[in-house]
Every structure is written in structure tokens, then in C-alpha cells.
Length: 429
Image 1 (cartoon, helix red, strand yellow):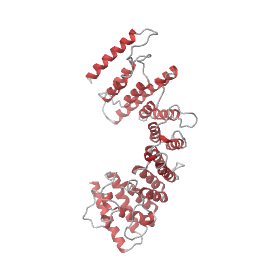
Image 2 (cartoon, helix red, strand yellow):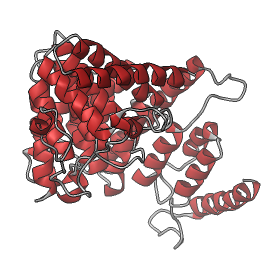
Image 3 (cartoon, helix red, strand yellow):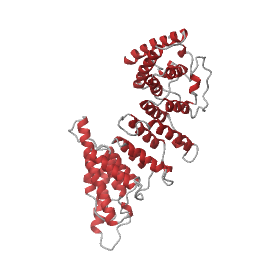
Image 4 (cartoon, helix red, strand yellow):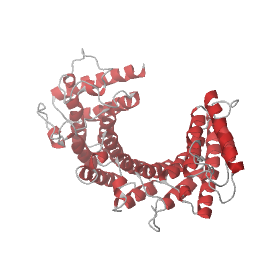
């Protein structure tokens, strides 16, 4: 860093000479430019010297080719967003939170300066773009409640998401996702959903939607489903399923593969169905996700089932999704739903969900009959979801064993229940 600062000192001397020698009406030297500030601000930030940034900014000229432009303003906001507690402050949560608020306050002032200078000078070099706006949103999202609300108001107005005025900044994917994530962070879930709906219906903006954008709205539906007083709590599962189907339709038409659902998308939809206690939506999501038909799991025959989806688009159940389905069936207390969900678990097999805890010596059919390979899929290493699945499986087995079934089936589920208790002990250790 010493060599970089030595080079920077040379540049500052050149800048000072160019400004002092300049005469009104005459052009500045050919290489007079503010562009070196951008990488230097970034380097100081990367080396953890965020406290120097305001000094660098305050030393800049107020006019001419060495005055800050939107690139410098953006670099300043990005740099200040990474500023950590000052030396001497402990790295505890309270200090970090205070630092985030301080960063948000300073970035807010940098933003206000850029907007004010841009409005006064009408200089295209000071026009706000999506890079500057995203830098503001990302930093203010970590600040106080007032900072976060200010960021939402600014983002909504500049991106034209309120539907009242034309956008001041052209919407792109980064700015869209930043405002949607901020809405969820501030528990403004209805606003997140409404923003996405506005973009979907806008012919000029909808092309900026990607999978992460829709996941934000699906996450909002999942949160609304957990709030009993919300007017959307009972319809969230239906709305999330509708949005999932829209994603699949768009993935094979205008928006392309960038909006194709993945495991997280499906699990968000299943989470919402579980919270809404909506078995119909959950089974529809299961069929879309896996290519399997729920009707195939109603009987007691050996599994002769193949997915109707190609391997590239099929997403198999994991510990998280299977846990949602089992807990949903248990809470609804429908014997048919319990039977089907347990049969789905057996179809995939214990090693599929618990690859590190299931013992090959355990004598149970679900260890031999596999709907997929024995290799764990994405998310299976998450101990939390494995444990919640084991809990959900145990509850489903206890509830189902209280009903009528064949002797062989009862023995099979009793063995699975014992195995489930063993898995939970292994997960605890």
C-alpha cells in the first residue's frame, strides 16, 4: 500500500499544479481527469482504510475536470459500505451495528451531495445511474429503520415502481433485486410482491426479472403465510404456486433459462404451502418439482415409478422439502396424506436424506429401494434440515401407526420409527 500511496501523492501534485496553473477560459492539460480516484478509493477500502475515504473526497476540487463525477460518488458509497469498526473498537455485534449506521449516514450524505450537484449543474456526468442507486440501497439496508425506509422510498421513486411517474433510473436486474430484498428485510412483504407484479406487467422492464427476483416474492409469500393477521396468509400458497407456474412458462419462452426454478425456489413454495396447511398446492409443487405423480404413492405395491421430467430439469426431494411435506400431512391429520408422504420418503430412501447417519446394516426396505442415487443432493449436508426432517418423520410415523394398515406395513413402519430415533441421536452428537 505504501507504493500505491506514493504514486497517489504524485498524482495529487500533478492535480494541484494543473489547478493552480489553470487560467479562466483556457483548457486544462490533456490528461486532467478524475478517473484515478475510482481505483484508489477502491484500494483504500479493500485494505481496510475506510476512514481515509472521507478525507480523500473532501480534498477534491468543487469544479473542473478534477471534481467528483458519478463514478467517484459510486466508488465512495461502495467503499464506505465496507467500512469496519475503527481500530480500538471491539468486533462485537453492537459495534458492527453502530458502524453500519455510521456508514449509512455518510453514504446518505454522499448521495445527497451527488443529487444536489446533478440538479444544480445539469451535468450528465452526475446523473444517477443504477450502479449508484444499488450502492445506496445496499448500504442503507444495513442502517437504522429510518435509513432503510429512506432507501425504499428513493428506490421506488427512481426506478418508477410506484406506477405514478416515469423512472429516473433505468431498471436493471441488480437494482430490481436490491429493492425487493430491502422490502423483505423491512417486513414490507406486500410491497415486495407488488413491485414484482408491476415489473412483470411492464413490457420494458420485465426482461430484467431473473430467478432471484421471483425468489424474493416467493419469500415474501412465505413470510405472509406465517402472519395470522395478514389478509394474504390464506392465499399465499395459491399465489406462490401461480408464480411458480409463471416462471416455468417464461423459462421456455421470452425470459429463458435465467428464470428457471431451482431447489430454493421449490422449497420456498413448499414452505408456504406448509404454513398455509394447503395439501393441494403442496402436491402440485411436488409433481412440478420431481415429475412424479402423487397418485402413484397411494397404493401399497412395489415402486415402479419413473419421473416424467428429464434429468436436467428434475429436482429431487431433499431433507428440507421432505420435512415440509411430512409435517404438513401430520398437521392436517389426514390418513391418506400421511400414507402418501411416508411412501414418498420410502421411495427416495433413508440414505438419500441422511447420507452420513444411515447405517447400511439397518434392515429396512427404504434402504434398498431408491428413487434416486445414494449420493446426497444439494442441501443434504445441512444438519438443521436433517434434524427437522427426522422430527417430522417421527411425528408422521407415530400418527400413521395409530391407524389401520397391514401387518407387514406396520412392522415396516415400526422399524423405520426405531431407525428415525437412532438417526436423531446421531445428529445430536
